[in-house]
Amino acid sequence: MTLANHQAIHLFLDSMSAEKGASQNTLDAYQRDLDDLSDYLNTQDISFEACLDEHLRAYLGDLAERDLAASSVARKISSIRQLFRFLYRDGFRPDDPSTMLKAPKRARPLPKILTVQEVDRLIEAARFNASLAGPTPKRQIRAMRLYVLLELLYATGLRVSELVTLPASAAHMDGHFLSVIGKGNKERLVPLSDRAKEAMRSYRAMLKTTGAPKNSSAQPWLFPSSSKEGHFTRQAFARELKAMAADVGLNAASVSPHVLRHAFASHLLQNGANLRAVQKLLGHSDISTTQIYTHIMDERLIELVENHHPLSAQFKAKKDQG
Image 1 (cartoon, rainbow, N blue to C red):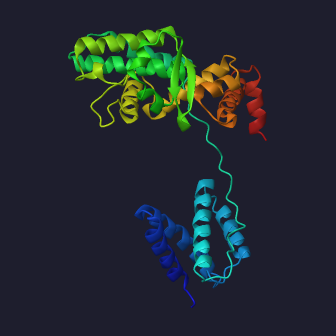
Image 2: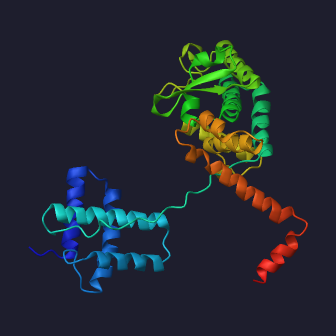
Image 3: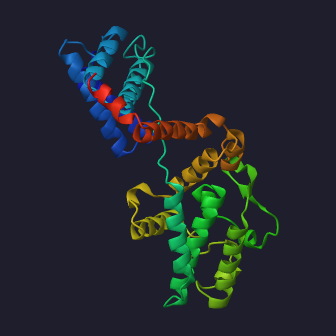
């Protein structure tokens, strides 16, 4: 049986839907990627059944000339591999010409970070709001909660999921370390500053005296809420943090709980912390994940020299002249 390219794509999509339960969005993405390959092969009158690895390599060359992002090319290659694996498996081809295709390496984007001064503006604004008598107990609790979240996050570098699920007992610890259950159910200890401990205790005391939110002081979570999880959610924290960022004049789109975690790590390294120690604090299983922060420091040092070196104007003039 000879298949036209559009028939092969149709059969493949049916298989992905029936066997793997692919969503409509996923199927649409496959359709676009494979239609693009089909259009290219049709210009040479080549079907999927007759396609060779050299034709696929030529197609990748065509993609390179279009200057597509590495992520887009990688997605197209994944679609192609799955199509030809399907055609080979179901007997429409005697081989799979896509096995030698290699996806381009994706450049890992450097994480956004905030300066020490910017983080200080956020925390101090939250601290000031928390010190005010709120119009209602609920509003006062909300302001205090945001301050404690910021204080803890920047003091410990916790993942936001680890932060919002801290147990209520964390506020009563007498030691200088906080025990955290991270990814892979692995436990680690992170130092806890006196300021962060005091903020947590004040917050728990406020919960007991105000009685808002309902029954919060009896909840197992440090940050209880009426959500279905029973604790304050990371999405709600992100929204409140962005609102606070806008209030202090920062770009809200560039501020998130994860950005504060990045700031924690970057600022430690800038002040001479050991990379292995930062790896342990962040709970990274692989140090290569932590090394991304050294790249940030390198870029900032280059920018510092280019902008502030006394001969920087001459350097830039020569660079512009080629």
